[in-house]
Amino acid sequence: IIGKISKILIVKILSIIGLKKMASRSWAESLLRVTGYKGTIVGLIGDLVKWFVYILFFAAIIQTIGLPGIADWFNQIAAFMPRFIGAILVVIIGFMIADFFGRAFEEASRKILREDIITQLSGGLIKYFIAIVSIIMALSMIGIDTASLSIMFTLIMGTIMVILIIGLKDLLPNFTARLNVRTTFRVGEYVEVGKYKGRIESIGPISTCLVNGKKKIYIPNTMFLNTPVEKTEKKRSY
Image (cartoon, rainbow, N blue to C red):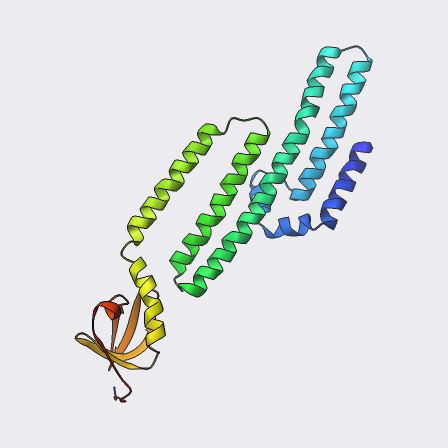
């Protein structure tokens, strides 16, 4: 009875402080369903607290009837349970933070870069980075040596960063050049960039689109910095 009451109180408290609502919006609850658990994250914490109370009572009863060896075993489990519950809370909160910052970075990247692949990549990297850090912290709380896991994680993240830097080294100059292009030119203006000419239709994160008749010409943004550009307000018919 006390165990069930403890579960009800914990679930109620966590619901009042908003953990139940926040957890339902995060991907942590979706991952929980993969394990086969049909309840919510708050319900899982409540169940763990309930069994923690049960184990304490079992240990006391076994100690009373004169079985100290078994009682010690239950006491060790009872001592481990708070750390295990704390580790689960760290993972849950870490996953919610990862989900929040992943979405925030994705939205910010979408507004700045307007490239779906890059926005999803940036949001995903932030999301999974925070999630993995929270898992490592949780494993450390329950006594698992995470030194080798931390080193492996650092090496993997370092490798990913190197690959991204190498892959984006030709694109980054166009991102920065876009700031100058958007400051100097406007959509609808007629420009001549080297041998290319036309009216600016759009200024993207990597290239600027010119329209000349029925043709669309995509010019790397860096070309606007490295090539003389002639701008005129003269209207042309296409």
